[in-house]
Amino acid sequence: MLISPAATMDKVAYKVFTIARLSDDNIGDVKALHKAVYGKRPAGDFYYRKYNTGFAGKKYLGFIAYNAQSKPVAFSGAVPCFVANGDGLIAAAQCADAMTHPKYRLQGLFTKLCSMVAALCKNEDVAFLFGFPSHQAKPALVNKLGWQQHGHMDNFTIPVNAIPFKGFVNSLRFINGLYGMFERHVIAKYVLPEQGVANSILCDGYGGVYRNSSYLNYKAFSRTLVVKAGKSKVWVALGYALLVGDISLQGDIDEVIQVLKKLAARLGIGKISFLTSVGTSLHNLLSVQCPPSKAFPVVFQTMGNSVEVDNIKFAYADLDVF
Image (tube, rainbow, N blue to C red; front, top):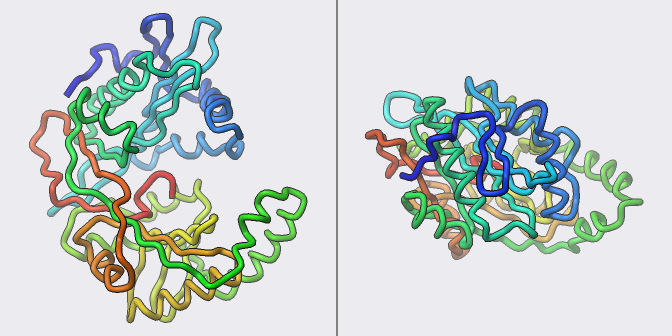
């Protein structure tokens, strides 16, 4: 594992850049960088709520790189959590956002910042990091920074017989408000007054993210909801697809899928998307419904300790983007 010795300092120099730890004072710069990288701004307090992770006893696990004009040009961050594995809880963190301004790529900023984040996490007594990198990011993490892959996540996509008008609505700002009213009316029949569901992976005997009330309160930074499907509870997010984070299954998976299809059709959403590690009960049930496609590798970086990560699995709800 490669760790920068200066990783826990508030401000360091790297080539022509200055690197500063994420804080209350500079978190707005991540929002500005997001706009430069993705072409649109996130919600006003999105990054503040995402990285203000006091529920885990540590927050602002990230670094921002600035150019000579003090403009933000790169960022890397991690989101802490607890993982239940065996008889206890382990402090862990998910490698989350990593973005570099298009004009400053291929200058070593990605690996430098990731290395600094890993060292900061070690200093904060995080036992291991995990992540779900793109095919572009994986070589740098594995080959340069010593991360190791342990399995992958599969995606299951179930088509919905509907006119996918939600995507059309999202492109027309002037009718977004009307659609929002319609959406609230539709989901009122399904929604439950809960913030999430228990981790089904733990019931399978695997290690997984520990979702207590503090964690679920924190996850409210992302707009999700729990809906009823028969006697089951389903944690979902509504986008261009109906994203299923996890299911508290009390009955038949066929019934759950039929309810979700009906909900998606009424909302003008053309497909349902599941994401889960290979070997979970949810993966086994969905494999009967449709063939999986390989989605993301699951990679880990342990901090020179003896933590066993082979038995840890994930569902869509565990990703920072859910």
